[in-house]
Structures are given as C-alpha cells and as structure tokens.
Length: 248
Image 1: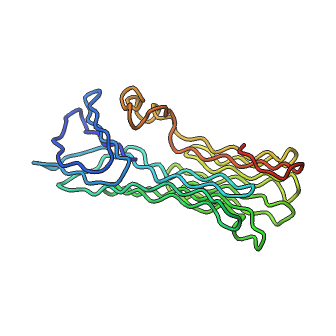
Image 2: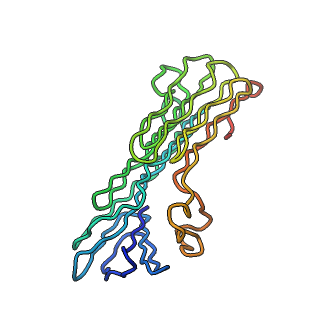
Image 3: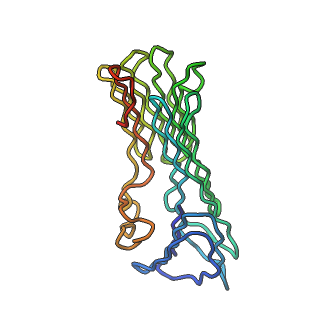
C-alpha cells in the first residue's frame, strides 16, 4: 500500500491513474492509496509528493507454525514525481499448509525510489531437518517453529526501515510453542516454555501517529476497520494433551 499526498497543500493534477486505489482530498492534501500495482501519471509539470510504502505481509508456518513477519514500512518521504511512475504493490505471502515448508515471504513494494521489503515467513514443523523450523528473513522476520522433541529453529532476521526480528520458539519439549512474527515497532514475542503458549506478534504503527488524516472515516474503502499497520502475526501454541496447534 502506498499513500501519496501533495506537499504544502497544493493539489497536483494527477491523471490516468491505474491499479487498485482510493483517491481522497482531505486537510488540503490529495491522497492516492494503492492496494494493487498500477501507474501514476502526472500531467503538465513535475512536482513533489510524500510517499509511504509498506511491503507485503508474510504467511505463517504450519504445525506449531511461527507467526509471519510484517513488511518493511517506509514512512512518508518527500520525492519528486515526473510524468509516469510505476507503483508495484507487494503481494501477501501464503500461509503454509504442509510440514517442512515455511510460510511464504511477502512481496516487495516499490514506489518512485522507495523499496519496501516483504515480511519473512513463519517457520514450520519439520520431520526431516531443522532448516524449515527457522523463521525466514525479510522486512520483519518470521517467528521460529517449535516442533516437539526436535532441535530449535531460529527467529527470522529483520532488514530495512521500521522492522524487527521474529520471536523464538519455547523449547524442543512436548510443550513448545512458536515465536511471533516481527512488527514495525517491536520484535515478535518469544513463546512461553512453561505453558507452551505461542509468542505474540510484534506491534505495528498506529496509522494516526503517521498522519492524523489516516482514518477509516476518510478512507472508508481501504482503511475500513484498520487502526494499525505492519503488525506481525502471532505464533501457535502447543498442547501435549491432544497434539493440536492453535493460534495464540
């Protein structure tokens, strides 16, 4: 998702905008919020815009799976737009549905000169090796899986602006829980070894702390029900009694 607004209150003459987007003028600024890839064309003159970019969120793991990490969040940056700019929205990573396969990483978002990495997928239970127990690296890292009686996985590492690492699994015991994915303002939570409870997802950014105009009242289509952006996913808990995993 990108949000573009003019600098200094002057509304620039945008035209030929393609891709999923919502256009709103509020507080003397024009915003274009892209939810799918498209093209932004400025007619007449070059101008300045403020650009916010966030990478695609990642998928969680399977079988006591780790939580997916949030995409990198590049806060509003003033850039020059010329005639035609391609906006590429990073897709969300798919959650894993099978052992031995991590959750999918989120796609990279690009807007003008900004590049926001997608989040790292959560680790998955693995009967064969330790490789997929670890959360994947990404914007924010994925949480580590906690496959019972097996070697511990590692949290995924973070890279980029406003990113954090994933959380650690509890232990390689029958009551192991998995780590949460990293978020924009906090690391993913570590699992609780004593209870087998999965770690919480790392907290994201409150939208109104980025820009007071970013509310569902102003953006009823794209921000419906949203107050926070770029949060990590929670890790799964493990119950030795019935051998099932549940979302923390």
